Amino acid sequence: EGPYEKQDPVTGVWSVNPEGDWVCECVSPSRGSAVASLAACEINECQKRGGDATCGLEGQQCVDPSLTTDDDWFCDCIHPLYTGATNPMAVAECLHDECLEMSGNCTLHGQECHDDNKKQPDNWECRCILPEETGEPKVMAAADCEASAECKNVTLCADAGQLCHDDPEKPDVTENWECRCILPHAGDPMTMGLAACILDECSNPTGDCPTCEHGFCAHHNQTCHDP
Image (cartoon, rainbow, N blue to C red; front, side, top):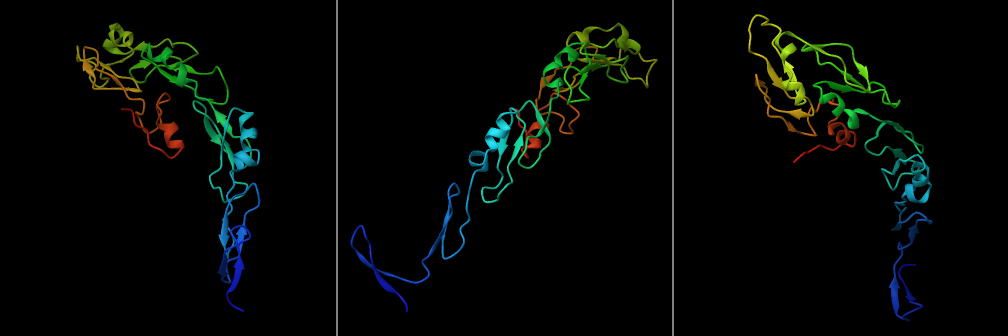
């Protein structure tokens, strides 16, 4: 018992081969090995077990979160689609917020874009911004909104894609209307003039903004930054 001599069949060199140097090696297509213990076998199931093919047929991407865990791959949606639900070793439920592309049709008129059913196409609608404006929403078109108080006679804000606001608590005060930015644009309002709005594509982290990218980054456990 104990160490013994062994000759390398290639080099012909003799060496002492101690006990306990046995090796566990993973079976292809897994990779990995360990001396005197079980190996942590790694395999990319997206590449080796059909994940890429399954997801790719649906225009999705395969994710294998752990190369040492079997049967944990899943399909994920590709931007601008986002994932409503994932299923182990199966395609995901992808949702599409049409306002990501169509919101300009609403903001051009000082209105908001909403897509309440993200599983169905061609159902986005423009809505009036309450309480400044009232009116019924319109599907795939600008709504017919009626402005309140002084804003009824102001077109400056809407022409610039901004919202006219007249303080409803001060109906008797005149010349106090102001233009306000509409998300994803942000900036300070301006009394009786255009606001200086800038586009922050990550704005409104609460998720109320349908055109902001915050939700896309957050879904993948990342933060959004717009330099």
